[in-house]
Length: 401
Image 1 (spheres, one colour):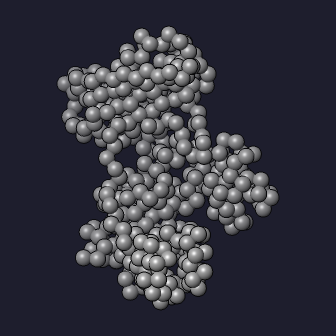
Image 2 (cartoon, rainbow, N blue to C red):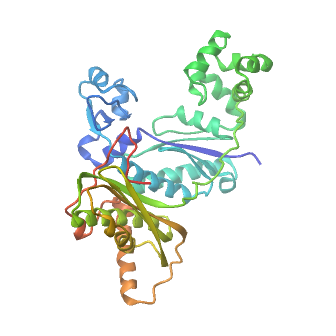
Image 3 (cartoon, rainbow, N blue to C red):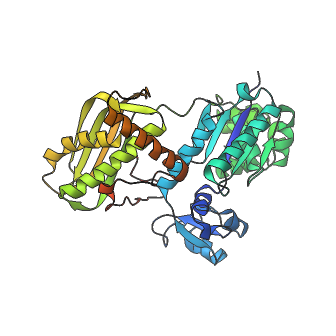
């Protein structure tokens, strides 16, 4: 049976997430930047900014020169990660065969679920409807449907923003003929330049070029170019579902080194709640917790303990992690963290003890709020005085491990 692949690409992802979260930014040209806006680049430009000439990876000073009305907005990696988990959860409602391609792109194999391209179109529309319902009106996606990943991604690129297109096997060559060589994922500037020196400037010319000569010039990549020019994909298809997670963890570099146990407990408790939320969101519990500490002199201590009963409650994780770290906090602490491992599926049966049953009900209600409004919608009273600030280097952050 011929495969049916969806490629889903969120439109101007970081920018659209910020516009959804902040009505002030909607309809305006914005550029998402790193922490140092003066020396940063535009990580993502909103659709409005792109129309005015702002491009991804453009320096902020150049972007402001092209578009003086551009609003530079600092990125929030934790927010984007939370939304990513939410739209991947939506994809899993329709198929278990999901392959993330980047933070905002995924391939879905819906061959069995769709049966044909009419069914695939229906599923794609249902996914778009669920994204709107779950994430809001301003976080949108473009979708390409084709017989393989390579053509699905190319199809998706032709209908941005917010488009949906179907390319069946008989339409693949027509699609390629309408595109430039560099539109195809896998043909970058260097490969394009080398193809041009061979007199190859279109897919028609690439198809007509002898395979032996391509292999002589590009070695094994020559076969890929030949197959790609015919709309064939040499990859294994959608290789797997989202990879099995072996552990969940968070660490945090403190605003300043401290030995104050009250401050350290608050940060560790907040991190434990983050770990517990992610585990409950994914339906798992852990039998082991590992606590980490880094001191001001950059030495480290790490230790782990095993639970009698598996848990996904941040309070339980914190109590064990704190009992591990407390005897070792005799000098300035720079970083604290914890991780949960030895994972298994949450059995979901109620506890035999009333107090634990009540806490499970409370956590279930709080998780419902987090699913709807995001992971920061509630905090324990003991952690109110602290705030986790993203430490950005581009868009990598040190919270989640």
